[in-house]
Image (cartoon, rainbow, N blue to C red):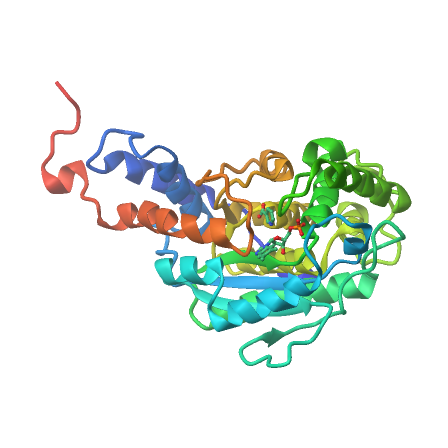
Length: 370
Ligand SMILES: Cc1cc2ncn([C@H]3O[C@H](COP(=O)(O)O)[C@@H](O)[C@H]3O)c2cc1C
Ligand SMILES: O=C(O)c1cccnc1
């Protein structure tokens, strides 16, 4: 399923890109006056392979929830049970993501891809549990080869189901106490940056915990023989995992220091790209997952929009590496999909302009100031 999804991904269509740019310049506004929104609309045209691109609605948020063995190293001030408790909160409609989703009319799908506990009442939960959390990445790989593949496939299936149900825009979401530690490790591996520069305070750790968190990331890279000099191109063997060269290395890195939700989000991105349905990325967890998706299928990023930039330093590093410009920068540090949801109306507005704004010709507006 993974190989077939990757094989279906096409890069941005150059004809649609050129048509969209030309169309922007014919609309009744000074050239370039919509700034970044013009780039977003052009990007979506390239991704869809048609100009104007389809309106990216209805949108569907998928919140992938999982737990992390590295939590045992004291990298988050919150107990692990908060993951399953928040899953219940999402299902009850009580989280920030639910409020933001209601605001933009997005559906919310909650996926258990690896929560350490089972919910007493799982009504409405999409059950795709691959494992009861990952292993501690400072003691060896967080996931086995099978687990990482199954989690990727879970994300692919969720994306396909949402698209089959009518979604025309996918938004990534996450829930997993300690997942900013795994995110930092992934960002360090894929960008080649030092852990100190890409590790953040997550939910808000004190100085002492922060120092430990950076050391834990360093230790995880060392124990898993990930030199942190950037991927692809580290020459790491993809031992035991399908694919040779860069994809095999990417899978090994994802299994070594990622989370089940990172793998699922990577699969979700790949499946959106394969179906030419745009994916709005949320924060640092999505950024780390997108680095893995990019290593598996570089063209998948043509189908992504960076919803926002969180305060996590690893997020900015991931976006830089991917060449993505975030739409919203509001010092958010929550995850769940909140930043992606806030960006969704902007992406819709950018595309709506392409469909509804008159051209200089059609409106009889003089094209150039005399
Ligand atoms: C109540 C609560 C709600 C959340 N919603 C998202 N996160 C976010 O914080 C967690 C990552 O931060 P760290 O790595 O510091 O543990 C993830 O679960 C992420 O989704 C939450 C965290 C908490 C505590
Ligand atoms: O960048 C994020 O999305 C983020 C930051 C802190 C905690 N959880 C998520």
